[in-house]
Amino acid sequence: MKIGIIGTGAVGRTIASKLVELKHDVMMGTRDVTEKLGSTAKDAYGNPSFSEWYKTNNKVKLGTFAEAGSFGEIVVNATHGGSSVTALLLTGAKNLTKKILIDIANPLDFSNGMPPGLLPGLNNTNSLGEEIQKTFPDTMVVKTLNTMWCGLMINPKLIGNGDHVNFISGNNTEAKNKVKTILNQFGWSDENIIDIGDIKGARATESMLPIWLKVMSVMKNGAFNFKIVK
Image 1: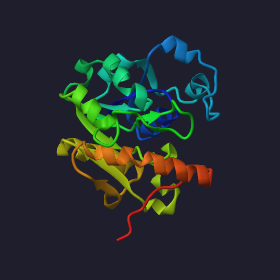
Image 2: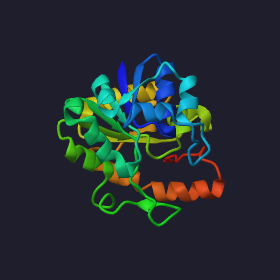
Image 3: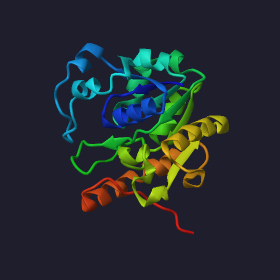
Image 4: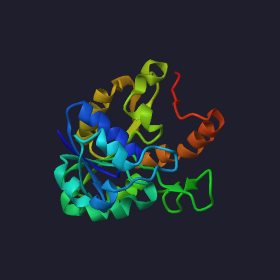
């Protein structure tokens, strides 16, 4: 399957590498391809520069946001939540029409330093997932994988033999089922993929980030997740 990824940060790279491993055809999208290929700076977490990463992941194609959106049969939003809508507008509504958009971003507000809160207007009675769906009404937005560290997104068995939860929400049942197929390929079992309904469910999962960040600050490690015990 052809999959476009909007965003070239650590999360996008992690997803891209795994999808290529699974034999999908992947194109990542960025604002400026030449600038991105010339990037030599490590990110805030000390991850290798994009150019360094790309040398060992050259099966991943690189294009503009619009090119990646047009390329993908399914598109993944892996941008920073505060700039997601802008990046997707640059991707182009026509390139997202009638396609599934997997939204794994969170609307984090770093304006007051660390730890971040949630952006005003994208919390409580709204969410980033809903905002994307409203902006692109002809796109099938599916929210998932946004409540954990990216290493667990593509390898749930890294901890607890994979017995922890991943939430999914969206307005279109068929779209969610197609996304679940990809999640199964990542290693997520059906019983640990919890469908919480329509795209309003993004309000709940995005609101998990403050507690997730608090726990990470205590554990000094992102390799943990939540589990539902009945």
